[in-house]
Length: 314
Ligand code: NCD
Image (tube, rainbow, N blue to C red; front, side, top):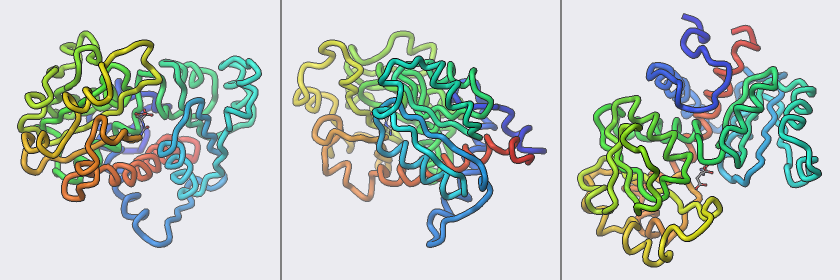
């Protein structure tokens, strides 16, 4: 079978629409890059001669940096578009920006945007593969994949695990991509948070909702904490950071209610003392937060490689 048969998609806009075996294919592909990234010389030149544009219309530390590192380790010419200094600030429309980027003949474009659906809109206007690095509250597919890779490497599987995703589910594209991915691969997913931060129609997504943190994480194999996305809230969704921590923060005492070997995850950036206590975040025996970042580079290398294979005639 050729790569195109394993992964017959032009873009990676979301986890929705991917078959379980396609997700597994990307995770399997990422494993070789985990190994390469642990060597002192981290170079492969399969993307040599290709141009990768990273266009981040929203702030980012780890996602932007890891897409840049991923492209460079594969030998691509990587350019970051600096939005603050770009014509976007002069009122250029998204479509015109897309047409401009396309005219420079990139071979892959990585986009983060504050509006749900904006990345798909751009993908429609350009001639190369587009990777969604997070669009509004919609999806963040490479985050879902890197989380799944981290879980699989620790637990040996995804199917049959119980995973609690906790906190601001309503505004989280990370939660959305993870829910779709993990349920698709046969995990039991629970979402836990204040009623104001749980989206409606959770049943349709196949997850169980809890508003009580202790009940929500009881016995689970993975506890995934999320940041309160204050920048996406247009009012008061939670009483105060202090009260939020008391009711929904992950503390050592609370974590004791999960499975004894439960993994603690967080996509970052963390708000220590709000959704997660520092001693839990820093507990090397439980927290895999730094490893999630490491897996991010490998997963993004896999996605860049797989999506550009057609252009490289492979
Ligand atoms: C997340 C994001 O931007 O969606 N961060 C990330 O990519 N690792 C989550 C967040 O901002 O809280």
